[in-house]
Amino acid sequence: MLKKVLISLGILVLVIVLAFVHKNYRNRTLSPPGIAELRVNNLHVEINYSRPSVRERIIFGDEADGALQPYGVYWRLGANEATEMTINQDVIFNGVPLQAGTYRLYAIPGPNTFRIGVNSELGEWGAMEPDSRKDLFITEVPVTRLDEPVEQFTTRIEEGPANGAMLYFEWSDVQLAIPIARKREM
Image (cartoon, rainbow, N blue to C red; front, side, top):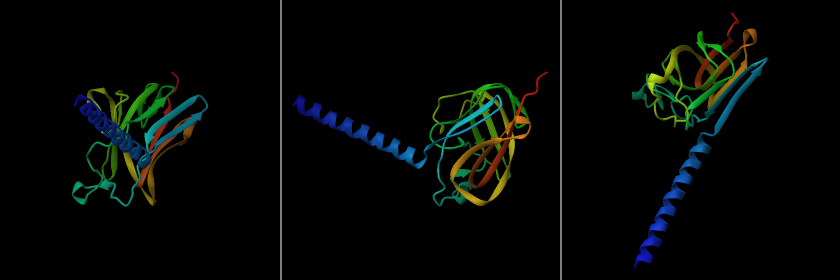
């Protein structure tokens, strides 16, 4: 009798593990990991994120309209794990000083601007809002509407003015452009 119970319990555990692996794999295929990286002179910027797709959904908008990411609500700036940015030197991030290091990025979307949070909490699942006490700052970034929608969430980094960088987040018909300037020597 005990042997049958242990076999049944083993089968149940196996089914649960296989279901978890399948779900995790499905999430990874629907929102695969992405890396955006730029090295310009001595500046190195890297963004690790996941890339969800539009798949005929309303992405940004009002909750009443069924938007996947409603205005005014926390968004992890991707999918799966939290989006993280690593910079190798002190910079000015959208006008705000930021020391070299690795940071969690998140957004609060709006129709005309997104609030971008830079937070020191790392290694967390992105669906959970970060501890606001670990926010270094929140900065406003204007929304540019794209003529050609972007199906899969894309982060890219290009060389910017004065050997700095421009960080772009694009999804659906929304583009955010964030300047990352080298911090001038005193």
